Length: 262
Length: 222
Image (cartoon, rainbow over all chains, first blue to last red; front, side, top):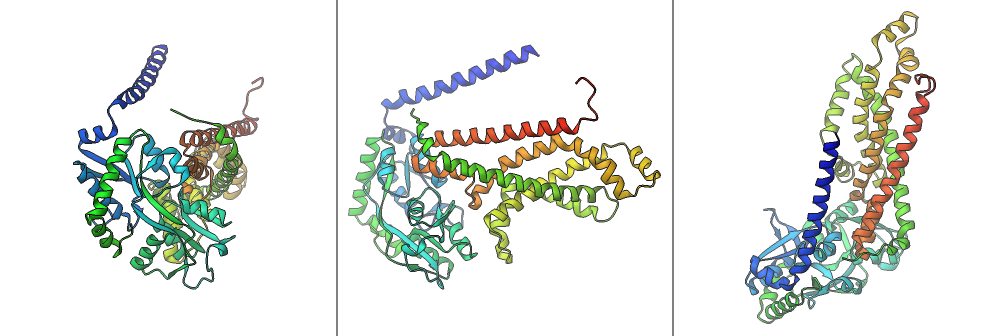
């Protein structure tokens, strides 16, 4: 029995030791930049929630697609690598980026001061804002009516922060489709989300909802990049500027929104 | 590498509030589970056709993940016109889930009591129900306590799954602040510690309950 105990201890020590070894080699490798590594690997990995139609969602072929995905494909093309979009939980995106699980967050993330403390953002790639959406027969007419009302938002979004500020009883979801569904089930008085996302949901699913009040606030969406990757940031900004100039951006934007949302 | 556990203190009251809800869910869930489990166990050992209902229930619930059951109850049932609140859905889900496991626990406990005891009490003129209530069940319960405690601990941890159906229990509260402050390490460590505290207290309580219930069977001087 004692022999096994010793064996177990040795295994544990080895595990811990190798674990440390891995994290050390990571920091040593920082002499090669993220951009170099992306080019060496030949692929750009960018993350999003995958639950934010029409910006990012899974289509009927179970492929991750949408506006964000296509912008990413275009950036990857311009730095001569393959695009690799991935979906992960919204509230784990920043943690995933800072721990190098992927290279970019290209998932309609608004640029905020809090987020800027942790990551860098590209120049904004589209503009939108927070919108209150209610059932058609509701008498809520804007943000100020939301006090003590039950409001659905996605966990970890700026919408969640705003809903709490407005004094609402907040229910959190993993994605907007769940929140819209729950309002159809009569469990929510309102949903706060991006205006474009709300309009799209109403159109796609024929929800009996309406948009009320002005935008709660406007937002600029950026592509989040780790602070240790300034070369990648520069490359992404160049690619963005090029596609905004040469009409590629406009083509993608009009495909999804019949308008240019830059 | 950077972490700062001092950010936790600002949010600790909210985390404790979440932990309170976790306990509430686990206690109500397991209470409901004990009720269903007892009924299912008694049905299963009965020699009536009703035992097939118990077989079916246990087969269905043990064979599917709790997460799927919660999604079905919360997001699925409204399509059939059954709208339960997130809290009711959570308690129902935890209850029917733990009930299926507890049914087998109770059945095992009951079947562990020698048949001779039933025969003896029946020959003394006790009815079947009285025999179960006075003779068999008290002993079966004592045998079942350790497994019951085990299930309680499992249910307490499983209540974290209710975070996906909008319950602001301990895990969801931690996720919220981890995403706001970007302190994943700090908040999830704190959540783990709080879960550990709760399960430790439950283990201790159950241990003392077990000790008290085993008074008659303990040998002197132990």
